[in-house]
Image 1 (cartoon, rainbow, N blue to C red):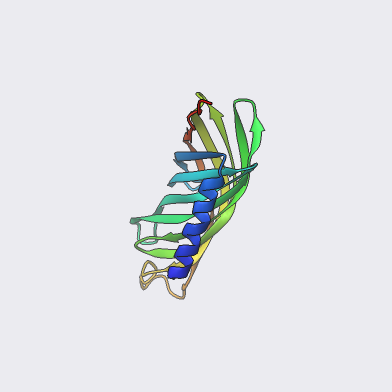
Image 2: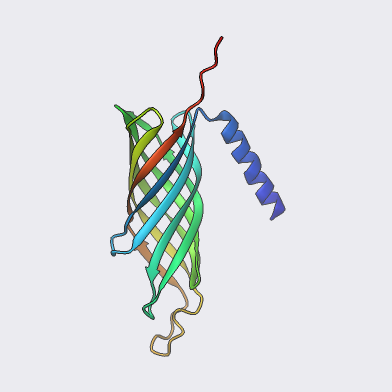
Length: 173
């Protein structure tokens, strides 16, 4: 595990050094089933590719009627397509969701865009498709529901938020 963490830190350090641009986004919005999702992304721009870690949060109703919060750390990779005043980015995402009642993998596709209002601040919109599969941790132990050992499903989050671009100060010659 220490080798994996060290390798990840090394790769992230190289990306950070090579990045032409760094951006941080914070978004919130509904999922297709009416539940709420939040997302935070940090991107490094490497040529025309955006890569970086992300965290998504989901507020999910379980079988017993209570709500649990799922936290999903992961990573995004997207292609940056320049547009006037911003860009769009199709990409892929992968996360590991965990919460009080559930844990498992989540992966899918993402389509988003950024419209910069100033050179450093923009409006960020994003939608996508997520497939998740994992194991419950006691949610389905109710005697009425039997025989379920795994949980899988699809979500379609629609998020809106802000994107901050870390602008490098110009060096004087």
